[in-house]
Image 1 (cartoon, rainbow, N blue to C red):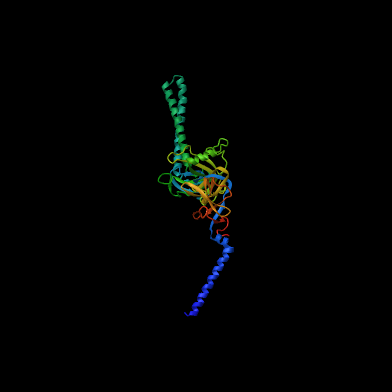
Image 2: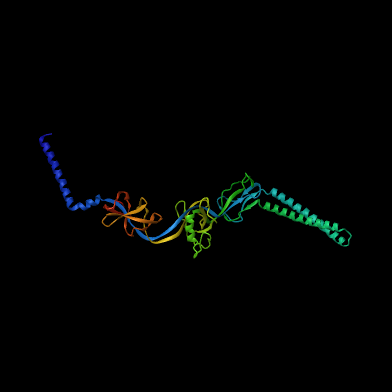
Length: 393
């Protein structure tokens, strides 16, 4: 490189240095605050709110029909027919199954024959007694003969009653060969098909299950603490509407389904245990929910939400805005000048994603919900409201 080239290169570097210095001088005169604002840490804030807070308990359980009736084969025999479509609704009295009737018809005929023979014996004994009684009055026969005739007539009469009972039993067993729906409801899968022998183990005895699903019930277990909360709420003396008196209780229970959706119908507590289980420390409760569209089925996972108190005019902040250090809870607030301050607070109950502040914070204060790990008391930050995009401003 020649001397002239080196001179031109040094001149260009010197001109660039002067230009940068000039830009810096201009920024120091008019752009200082903007530069400081860009360099300040950006944090997400939201104002603390004051509102009424409903307090609820959520209990996990499973659904079951208001009636779940197992359909049993009450006599032994070969299944002849299945007269319904599985997974459909049947009416009370509908024919569900038929079992081979021939053995039971034969037993009925035999029982009827025994009844006829017993009635014949009774007629003969009654005739003998009618003939002997006047003879005994005339002393034509002994008292012993009269006593024997009376006993024979009584025994024959008892034999007729026993034979009649045998006929009734045979008729009942014959009626069991035709199985009808005891209630209206949804019938499930059949455990036996036509041609199978049923009614005796190891063959099927319970052929299917019939469920009344409107209303549907939810059975769940709660802890002793939750029981006390519910008992104080639903067994109030002024409004006796509660765990043990479903007729008086309002429909104010909410049913949450497995997909997170909320059942449109409200429910009520209708049944409960008589004691807390000492082994598990839980208390079993059942709630009833209308199911007019028959969407809910027995065996589904469900959560029941019960309102037990409403905190009026409480200060509420997002749960993520609260940090804990050695058992002390605090929130970071930002004033109008962007300066960070810390406040120790006393926490109340949680409600959804929010938490109640019992003391230490006023409503309307901007508190930091994101960036807590990077801030320190006294530092200046650039607050961005949570409703706005993080890069706003």
